[in-house]
Image (cartoon, rainbow, N blue to C red; front, side):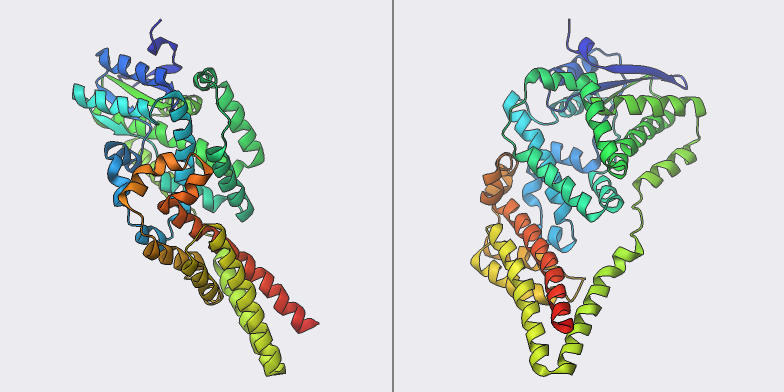
Length: 404
């Protein structure tokens, strides 16, 4: 029996075009072989893959990461998203190294085979940055920490996975069970990570059929999305929405949900409370006022410096964290992590070798601290966390002094 015949898939006719959606495991050798067999069969005149523009560019140009401007990543507030993406990639890389196959090999195979056959290639997944931002906006702060901790744990665990278990991922039952548990814990988390992307990819497939009318389109997606895409695609085939409606629905799924006003104004409210505390302290006595300022500097700066030290930051970065955090905490437009990460970049500028080895280094927890790229991100994360904790601890300390 060939590899293609063992893969989960479904076929659907839409307005005179036939669509076959193949479910794969992203680190499965058999999945890559199945994609090659299907495209080489000559039965298809168009190919679609579960990639967005940025991930497609990364697969096309593996050295693209080495040209990343960390200054811009940090300045634009993209460091948390980059860390989450690296954690996801590290988990996939760990499995890939275990089974001797590159992450996304089936997507690369589809890209290469489509190019060789001169077939149009459609990128149907939503941009990973948009997905992560929608996740970030849709859950509470503690769920964000829980998600990030889970990503790191999955990336750093050394427990080996049997190849048979990887192959069973294509059957759908293991992924469905995992997603169901995910949804029970947080529907807000499940929706942007899975359900919205199922709808988005179904819409992109339908849009490709509308625009180009292929005879037979092959879509290659992760097996966990197969069931959801089939449901949405069948509904679209029955509804037959026009091009404008499809475009509007895609735009809706690409839009970022607005921030809750409370969270937008909370940092400024905290600053106002702290400054009011200082003013009250100095009004009572200069000694009390300076004692409050000292508490603020020592606690906020001390915890930010501790975070930078835990991340393995340069000694000057640790000192910078101590000096910067008390000031940046009074200006919500600039975070302590932004300052410390920039100092770390200046003092220990990542080399091309750091970027080249990043994917492999991150499969082990020591690699996060050894690689200069990931260490910059750790400095950003831990000093930001330390400063945030310090703000609340120092705030309560000031309150105690004023009411004691």
